Structure formats: C-alpha cells, structure tokens
Amino acid sequence: MNKIIIQNLSEYVEKICELNNNTIKAMPVKNEVLLYRGHSDESYDIIPSISRGREQSTSISLFNHERDMIEMAQYKRPDIFRADLRPLELLALLQHYEMPTRLLDVSENPLVALYFACNTRIKKDQTGKNYIPDGEVIVFTHNEISASTYPIVNAIADTYRIIESSNTEMTMTTFLKRASKQPYFLEQCNITDILLSRKIEEDANAPDWMKNPDQWVKSCCEEPLFVYAPIRIERQQAQSGRYILFPNRIVPYLHNNSELAFTSEILPIEKDSSCINTIFIIPADKKVKILKELNMFGINKETLFPDSIDVLCESIKNRFSNLL
Image (cartoon, rainbow, N blue to C red):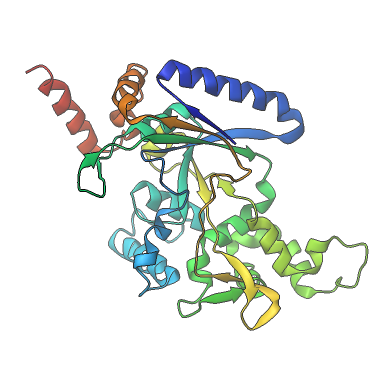
C-alpha cells in the first residue's frame, strides 16, 4: 500500500490516472476496478457509522441498536423506507439520509472522494485548541465479478432481523437456514439445499464449500463486500455511490468450537489491508485551495446534494454574501 501526499488537484488527477492505467492493464486477468473513500481526518477508521464509538455505549447490543433505528424510521416514514425494499436497498436509503448503518460510502468518482477528504471539520487538540486535521482519500481495489454472492449480501444487510435481539452469537448454519427462507435468497436455493442437507459431506470430489455451511458463509465474508444498491434519490447518482457492506465478526461458536458464529461486533478494515491500493494524504493547509479547484469543475456541496433544499439555499446565500 502506497501513501502519497497531495498538494493540489492537478497532482491528484495525474496520480489517479496512473493508478487507473495500471488497473486497466491488469483488467483482463483480475477484473479489478478502483473505488474511492474520502475522510476529512486521516485518523478515522474504516468502519461503518453503526459501529463508531460503541466502546462508550455497551448498554444496548448492536443488533438492538440497528433494529430500533430502522424500525423507527419505517414507522415514521413508511412512504420512504418502505417494507417492500430489499435489505440492501433499505440500508442504502437510510445511509444517504445520514442514519447509522452497516454500510460505508465509497464512490466510483475520485473527485467526489477528494471533496469529502477536503470538507473541513474543525477539531480540538488535548489543550482545547481548534485545528484542522489532514484528510485522506483511500483507493480500494475491487474484483468486479461478485454477482454470485448477491443473495448472501442481502442476508448480511438483513442481519438485525435474522438474528434475535437477545442473541450475542448465531451459528453460520442457523443464519443460513433463516436467510434461505427469505424471498431474496431464491437465486441461491440450490446452494443452500446442498449445504444444509449435508448429503455430500463424505464425497471426496465435492468442493469444500459444499460440505460446510459455516465455511461457505465465512468465505463470502472474508473479503470486503463492495456492493451496488438501486438509486432511489438524486444524491446517490450525483455522488456515483457504491458501498462497503460490513458483516459481523465471525468467531468459533461459544458452545461448540467446531462451528462458527456471528458475534454482535463489527470490525474495521485495517489500512494495511490488501484491498487498499493507495492512500492519498491531503494536508490541512491545502484543503481550501483544492475545494476551490474542485468547484471550478462542478464538484461542490450543491451538486453532490442536489435533492437538499437546505444545501441549495445555503449555496445561494453564500454566493451572494461574497458580493457584499
């Protein structure tokens, strides 16, 4: 993984083009694409909002927390957070309305990620003094051929419903049995029938994943899950949005170490992960200049949040304030 310090927009674009050219050369073999995530503070972990700060909040399990917020959103606005949405669609919609979910936003557009890396947030140091942290753009490498995992992806997005709120662990086999009864799992019913029947456990020629539901679910969760979701609101389109879906941590089952289980914990992606190609560091004193450069090319808050009247009015107010 490379770290590159960026001073201006033109330097960033040049480096991105180099990365993209290298990826295109490898494409026939690896089917790789680049996806981008911007952080306004380089110290941020790569972890979804549902899991941030949970070390200070242990009175409610992650499953309960997730369920309570989603069900309340559906109760308050059933017209928007409709019951007929597939789990991944629902989470993506909640995410874009700034509800904490197990999704993390990434973008197909490197300029969008750069905007969010430069979108300054003032912090306080240990003495209480205000400062602006350096930002970062994380460039992920992703194998685009992943359609075969789609039903299990929706099951992972649906974890809060599949696992009872009182549970702290659930075995992969139980998880798969419950997921396989959901309508979004019809595409893989043949796989789940094979896995759950255990009829070929002794077949020496059968692949390992067919013999063990635990290992099959685990194999689907071992690499970061870069997913699409249907576009329901304008900002999803404007931000060229994609997502990383985070499953719960997998450990040996407490009551039987020969089985695997989901826990109620979600872990971050480490910044030395093999899925990260490059990290661009944006010095704090360059952020304003880069934002002005991005604005020249139509990348600003108004264009990235086109469905927000508040943002539009703020943009108009700021534009005319500069004329006073």
